[in-house]
Structures are given as structure tokens and as C-alpha cells.
Length: 450
Image 1 (tube, helix red, strand yellow):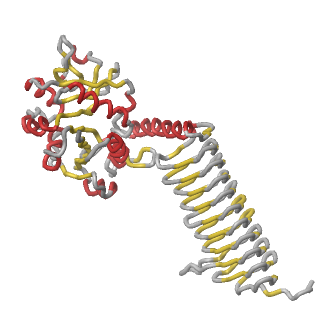
Image 2 (cartoon, rainbow, N blue to C red):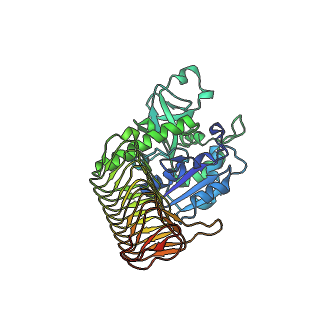
Image 3 (tube, rainbow, N blue to C red):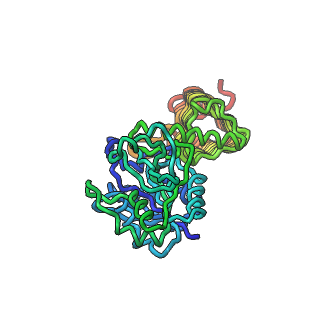
């Protein structure tokens, strides 16, 4: 069985009140349409065609290139039936089954779509609909059945009679088609009073052709929540975050309060790690085993080894080896690399710097564009003066050096192995191995000079 998926993503999303295309609004850290594409791949789609319209170039650029994804543009936009028709030149003759989904339904699961495809094949109808039963229709079309219970049509709420408005089985908008019949009959859709061609009318065509229409009911309405407003977006975000937390907890991660923990879909967390409340893990963050993260930590595209501790701190695009502890109230910025056993205490900042094994920076210090050797002590108030107003410059501190409190390291500068700087020193010249420098500007202190 060859399965193709058509993703409808041409709408403007006016109710979002934004210049951003609706399908690019993020849910759990990635555009909602990316969730739909990932789910389709899990179902086993051989090919996906995305029907674009509003800001087509922006959507295409955001999604990038993939071998199994093609793009077509619906212009003008004349309804869902017209949208699917745009995929016909690519898909006709290339698949046995066509699954049509919407790009603004990020909560759909692979399990639900698999059941729909299975129902479609087992039932043998030309079209199979995903339906849900609810007393709150929220504008969904009603599923009309005959006395024998066979699906006869979908009636949109605006066209429904009073009796039909009482129907509680609703059309979710997701449907599966026998490909050969779909491409043959799609051109026969009637023009609606609004001047559009509706894919839902394919049900009546299938009934009239005697090839049948069927329905596959689901019970979890959250899955078919379409994002039309930012209220819906927040609702989807809540559901997605809960699912992500549950997945990590089932894999051996302790999350003390999932309700106040935010984890993006691309985050990886090792077993036995504890996530404390008010923690935010974003992007492609990777956390090893046995770590303690939070409370109040934010990690963005950070990579942590095993046994790390991060409290009330922000880590961005940085790497921590095993056994590193950070915080509270510190900031590791892009390019920070901390080898195993490094300690960053409170109110420390590290940017584009490499700290060697076991180095300690206890408090109130800044290291930028620095190469710090192993076993170095960075005293309170130490600052690398790495920017001269035009260019950044490097600071190098050798293994075992001791940097006294309030030292200013004016780059470019090198402090040798085992060297020491006195409290308040302003280091403007290289310091030899084992030397002690003091003063402003710092000078080498002679031996036995008290």
C-alpha cells in the first residue's frame, strides 16, 4: 500500500492577527505544520504534498527541503477541494491511498491517523472520514447518516437544518481517499454558493457513485483542535507540553511539577535526571543522566553531560561535560564550553570561552573569549576586558593559575601556568609561568617582597 499525504496549509489565518503565516506559529518549540509532517512520516507516508497559499515562500523556507515533501501553490484559493486538486499533477498514479490533513492541527497523533488508514482499507469505501462525537460542535460540519447508519453527506453548520444542527457526530476535516477514484472525480465537485469547491462534497459524490463513504470515530477531541486564534494556540501548547512531560517521565525522568515545566519537542533528557519547577528547556537541548535542573532554569540548545546541576540560571548554545554545576543566577552564553568538574557559582557569566577540568569561578565574574586551563581559580569580580570598542580579543589563563578578586584581564593577554594575580590587579601584559603580579597596571612582584 502506497500512502500519500496532502497537507492543506494555504490559509491566511486572519484571526491570529499576525503577519506570521498561521501554520508557522510554534507549538512546543516547532512550527505547528512541522508536527503534522512528523506525524505523517510516522504513519508511513511515502510522499507529502503541502498546498501553500498565503506567504508561500515563507512557509517553504521555514520547512526547508526534504526528499519526501513537495510544495504546490493554490492561487487563487477556491476552497479545500480546489486545494487538493493542486496536488494531482504530483500524486496521480503514484499512490493507492491519499490522506488529507490540515497544517493547523499539531495535536494529531500517528496512532489516530493509522487507525483512520486501517479503517479505510478494511471498510473498502472510496472515502473515509475522521469523526468525533461532541455536544459542542464549534462550527464543525455534521455527519448525516441514513436509517441504516451509512454515511450520506457532510452538512456544514451554516447550511444545516434545525434537525441537522442537533447531530452530535462531527466532521474533523481529516479524510482518507481511494486515490484512483479521488483524482478521477475531484473535478466534478460542485461550485458552492460562495464560489468555492469543498472537499466535503466528495462524500455525496461517493454515495452517488455507489463506492461508499465511511467514518472512523475518535474519542479524544483534543487531537483535532484546529488553531484559529491565539486562544486555540495556548490550548494546543498546554496539551503538547503535557504529552512531552509524560513521555519523559515514562522514560525515567522525574518532573516534579509538569504543570509549570516547559519542554520543547526536540529536547532529550537522560534517565534519573530531576527537573525542578519553573524550568524551561528549549530547542535541541540535550541533558545527560542523573542531572538536577532547576528550579527556575532556562536551557536553550544546551548540551549537558551526566551528573550536572543547574539552578536558577540561563544556558544558551553551550556545552557542559560531566559533573558541572552552575548557579544560582548565572548565564552561560553561546560558545561556552565547560569541561568536567567545572564550578560556576552565583552571578557568573561565560561567553565563547573554554574552561578546563576542575576550574572554579565562584561568583560575580565575567569570562569572554577566554581559554582557561584546568584547575584555575577565578576570584570574585574577575573580568576579561575582551572588547576594545572595535574588536574582540582573547585571554589565555594557564593551568593551575590563581586569579585574585577584582582582577581585570585586559585582552589580548596571557597568564602563565601556576601564576597568580593580586586582588584588584589590572593585567595589561603577559604574566610568566609561576609569577605573581599586583597593582595597577599589574607588575611582577619580586620574590620575598612583602
